[in-house]
Image (cartoon, rainbow, N blue to C red):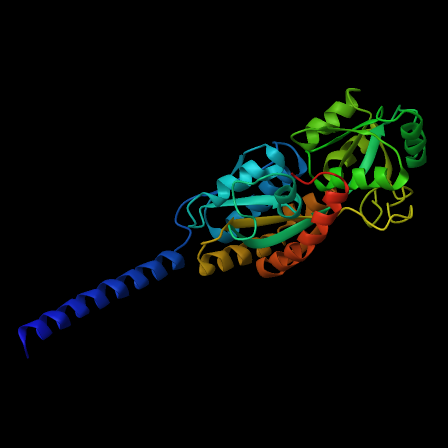
Length: 328
């Protein structure tokens, strides 16, 4: 055997050994994942519906994963700031995020996002759907949605309503309603559900489009009254209030709450997280919180949810363009 051949064989041996060691080490790292606490980024303010449900399912999943899950709030830009933070983090399973459907199908149309919504995200799973409604103070002179329409037509732009941000699905639904009925009202965006509800309770805005988690406690306390359910089913707490579909509209608002990671998140880790959070949905505390907030449990695998929001994306672009909300 020549010296050059012998040297080549030795080099090949060591290269193979290094590659094998890397693959084995990488596999072991994934098998032992997680070996330290996980950070869960929430894009909405503390105390709001998304924050509360993020903390609830994270606490339940800790028992499945075997490590603490620390929730951090990074608020702003309708969830874009939080999503960018997660997307730009190391794809090792230790930085995850919770978000809602609008960050997938609305914000990328209405603003330039610092990440590519189609390529930079790995969906892990969904765990709930939440419903929205239009509510006003219990002492407001408006006692029905028809009263609001009449008022808004008589005084264009005077009726103000709060949401948890520009480009959120409640904002989109509200503007579609106004376009269909031929009236104008004024949108006042806030950073979270509690801020928006606080504004209507304090008399700073006339109404609020928010989720059941934010509205129901104040309905029970006789501080807010619901005038219209903007999702497809009535709420148990106000069974006499009609849905938007019952009012003759051909659209409604329904948003998933999901967990996601980065595009290069290793598939074994993604699958492990998906199963852990799916199991966490059976936790009694999670189930109780879902029921108290009148949310709906809704599991979709990462693959299923990715296919769903991608199919909804083009149609939402058409709707936003019609409303004049597309970024030019």
